[in-house]
Image (cartoon, rainbow, N blue to C red):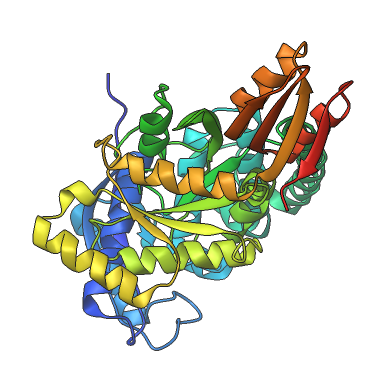
Length: 426
């Protein structure tokens, strides 16, 4: 038997500056979030405001209209696109008689259902508890309304304070565990030193996981829903000519991503900061792609990753007509100096440009050297061909002379081998 879906009524309260088209798109995105969370959207209500009302966020008259809509549509959940203060949430629930959540709480709920790894579950729980703490009084009021009856008539202040203390203890415990996970992650990163690394970042549903699956040929979970995947995945990708890169998929960003969530996922996102290049994936077929790019840039700035080497990867280019694609490419190149490639995760031919871009960056970081290797040291010669880019080879009586581009880690390993000498190309 299928569980009954929450009948959700959505509320948007954009300011007067926001374009009507963008206001509609924001509400459409909220509807997609609600669907992802398992809700059934039964209606929407919009009011343009100059500033939030202190009691209800929207005006009092509009709040009473919302109460009528809740009754008429038999809604049992109201979702605001804007972040509500604890007092506003409580006042709205008192007026409407149903649960009221905001965009942040909705996103946190989705993350809670999508987290698979132990680390992701801890990160989401920490963000939820930090969001919940200042809203405990409203949560308890709602709980007593649901469970009210003889022996259950309100939990009282004592239980409220007990819960605050327990939540504080749990938050401290989660932070300690996540610090331990971050240390283990740092050890993992150290083991990858010397390898070229890239990280996929971008707006949710831009196609990052699909790209990584196509580039690596490995199986990854892909679904056409917001926040389909939360757990980071790293795969080896062949760039050609014996070169390879480790590419990491990261959690998608979204407009008004809760700050508690960004803070909780900071250690995971630091994986991107350790990469040699960030691949900013953008859905080229989305009408609001520029706003999505700005959202991601804002989060990268908050994480102090905005000065890293970044390549824009415009995905889903196959969903544009030929004339649209030509105009799109011209527009991007005219207004953005950031290097860009145009691909489709479903077209292996288009991915060649991305592989070449990554390969060029990898080669630019290699040391250009001349290596003298004893002919008897076949292992050293093999490692130069396997991990380096051999430009020229000359065989002498007792040595092999190789002009090659190699990673610094390989240079260090070779320098410790008996009979091997390395000189920089002048």
